Amino acid sequence: MSNHLYKNLIGGEWVPARTGKTFLNVNPADSDDIVGEFPSSGAEDVDAAVTAAAIAWQTWRLVPAPKRAEILYRTGEILTQRKEQYAREMTREMGKVLSETRGDVQEAIDTAYYMAGEGRRLFGQTTPSELRSKFAMSVRMPVGVVGMIAPWNFPMAIPSWKLFPALVCGNTCVIKPAEDTPLSTFNLVQSLMDAGLPPGVVNIVTGFGPDAGAPIVSHPGVRAISFTGSSEVGRMVGQTAAGNFKPCSLEMGGKNAMIVLEDANIDLALDGALWGAFGTTGQRCTATSRILLHKKIAAEFTEKLVARADALKVGNGLDEAVQMGPQINQQQIETSIRYCGIAQKEGAKLLTGGSPLEDGTFDKGHFFAPTVFAGVKPGMRIAREEVFGPVVALIECTDFDEAIEAANSIQYGLSTALYSRDVNKAFRAIRDLEAGITYVNAPTIGAEVHLPFGGVKQTGNGHREGGTGALDFYTTWKSVYVDYSDKLQRAQIDTGE
Image (cartoon, rainbow, N blue to C red; front, side, top):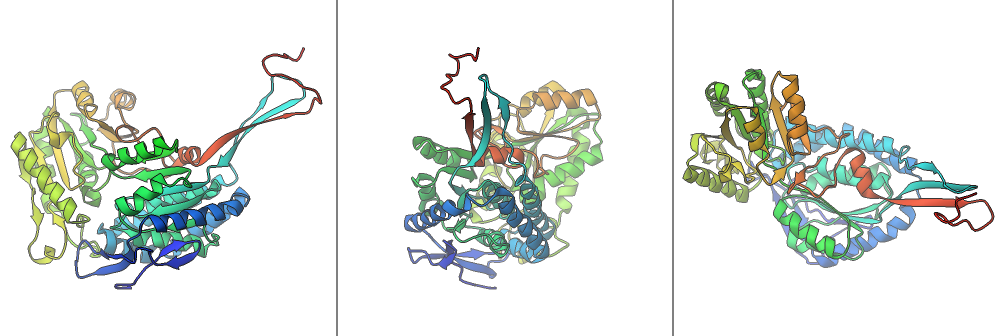
């Protein structure tokens, strides 16, 4: 497998980039481990992929939705058989530990089965007409060619969230995986092809955002865009799409708060905090990056969290004993270093971590120590800006209302959590937290594929991944009227009398 040369997938053929350029996919835990070499594509490659997708759409849209769904179901079965292989390859390219990459593949399996079920349930409405001898209904129609730009942190799960609902709805796709983790998208699409997906229905173009991503967004043949990534890039994607009146689904950043009240089960909340803050090395848009602690339990919670963060075993995710893997690349390490410096300048107190791990077993990878800051105020940058690393900020609050206010005081609104045994407070939190997701007595991570995923404010633009929300994005409504009266009947004018 090592240093295998991969190619773009265009119209069912594996072809090199027209640019002639490639880049290396390197294991972030071990720079000696080259996962593969991939095309560094440009606008010409994107154009070829969009053309192939447009041709394939003419026949794919006519395949009955239940038949399209059968391919997804078979894909789920194939992914189940290959789960361990794909998880290991994902750990090599992304770094997160094997239990998490197995979960990532499982999420794609779950999405395959869920969306396969939708093949017989792409329901519209039938409704009485206001006129005699006239029938009225709505049907879901495919959008056409959809452009997809995926992130590196869930390199199979998120592409499955995009591809599977788009496919069951009758669209064709051009996907650009993140340049850090392209192999997992190749593995996902290979499973689709092995399940019988026709050529050109899904096309893969690998490369970097400005060279390969931007041409997908601006291409006139692409009817809709699905983007997951940073709010900064998402703003550019959204503005370009808006200029061409292109539907655009944006899933972007978060600065997610977990509230721990004085009546919480503290040990449970600690388990949740450790998983929410340091699972995936903090590199989730839903990561628990702020913990709002009631002052009565703050000292106890803080002491125990620091002890548990210090005890985490960091290393290569292929080692089953390791609990936290590397960050994805040097740029992310530098972001973590920068924010730790900012936090200390602001007056936050560094309790543990705060720097890269570089000695011995860590010298060939991008490792950062699990980091905890206390004494954080809601207005500090460390409490407002997304770090996307294993860095958590502890904020003390005097009561529930102050905690809700602090949780809502940011530009993002993705995920939130409340630890409390008070059912009244739980329901108030569900109502009052400004977020697309709220957990009660669980951390801010752990979404399931059959519910809508996404957020409010600068986290998203109103669309959702997952569940029926995805079907709403990947279809467009057509209203149909059949008049069998054999005469002209004018709606709103001839009232049928």
